[in-house]
Amino acid sequence: MADKNERPIKVMAENRKARFNYAIEDTVEAGIALTGTEVKSIRSGKSTIAESYADSKDGEIWLINATIPEYLQGNRFNHEPKRPRKLLLHRRQINKLMGAVDREGMTLIPLKLYFNERGRAKLQLAVAKGKKLHDKRESEKKRDWSREKGRLMRARG
Image (cartoon, rainbow, N blue to C red; front, side, top):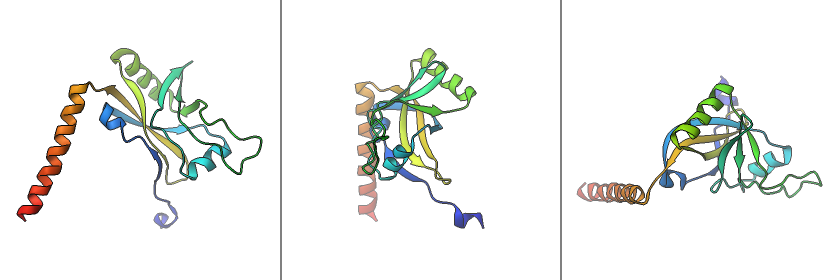
């Protein structure tokens, strides 16, 4: 019975180049502290997280450089488009992420910004390591070969 009332996950922004530029080690779902006009602007679907990243400051994790444009019907209390936004995580998750970034040279990259079943804005955050140029070429070769293999299999029947 609960299936009728639940909404599906709606992806509002996606960082598609992240999987090409970084080797993803682990992913974490985080909430975001937003204002009302930010939520309305995200729902309109014009936000971008392509050039953003997450950083730790004072024992908290912040989303830096994500663009959420101003809400058109907002008044003088509208938000700043590129302000740092606090990510809502448990203390144990924050310590784990900060340890991975400090020790292993990893970085925190947002993959998806979406609304979950309950209508809450969530961010899928990845612990990733930057790929070198030869790694990027290798992943491109694999992708091209799998595409070509699919064509050949379809042609054979």
